[in-house]
Amino acid sequence: MGYRRFVDRQGHAWEVRAHSRSEWEFSPVGDNPQPPRTGAAPGYESDPFEMSVEELERLLSVAQPARPRGKPSPFKD
Image 1 (cartoon, rainbow, N blue to C red):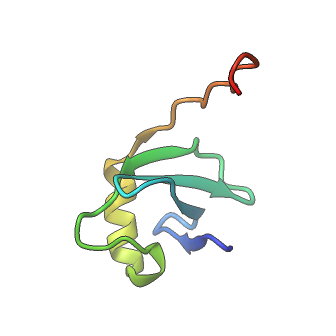
Image 2: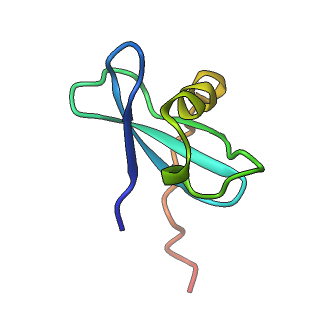
């Protein structure tokens, strides 16, 4: 499955990944020096491919820097 890619107004390429119904991740692509960000998914749309670039830029502008995901526990089954 592919992820939605778009280029913002500053010319930085991003990849949008829907982690859940409530959280999307914006990952930098190529030579984009920005850190990854996470933000709230819009309540009116669940598919990033259905959104315009302007809507994605708006979500990106309020997204927070992504927290590093922890390692899976070696004690879990």
